[in-house]
Image (cartoon, rainbow, N blue to C red; front, side, top):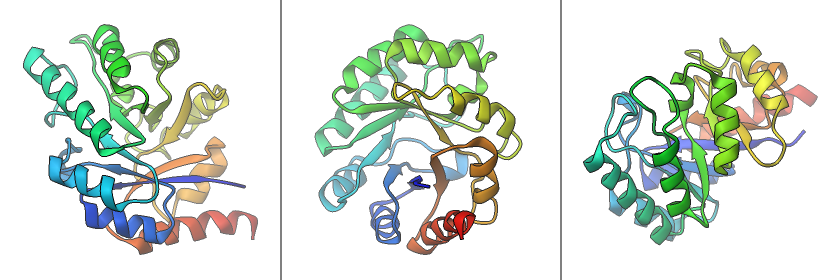
Length: 220
């Protein structure tokens, strides 16, 4: 079974280590202790120069909720432009309305601005009231991937919902499973959800290797 491993990292050096460990794709962020925000422009540029595998830039102007005013949307636009200039494969973004629904207008604007990069709607998705409706809205907007724990605090807790969403993957909108994915539970998560794309935090090569070994054991 083939799995795509997306390593979430906080620096260019960690991105290189994740690549050395066998990651297929990297998501570059900063301040993961508070859920992640857009990395420093210098880090984004450095990853663009050094990395051979695809990388995604998180577009998030601040910690906290995903309801953004005009000034924060401008920060998001600049982050998308930085990712494009650096040669990123994609961006991960998420904008919601005050009542917890997908912000269709602002999401559409950022998706269009990001092209030809691929677009992931990040775990803001898990805060929407109706995941199925949000999933269909993202498909209609042309979003390429959704990063999700199935609306639960962790992927294991949300595995039933994740399995339902993964079953709806059709090559248009893919599901990337996230939420406390670790070497000790990744095999169980992959089996329960049938997920083929898995996202986890790492600061070094060994964590990536450990996740890969755990998945290989499924067929050992």
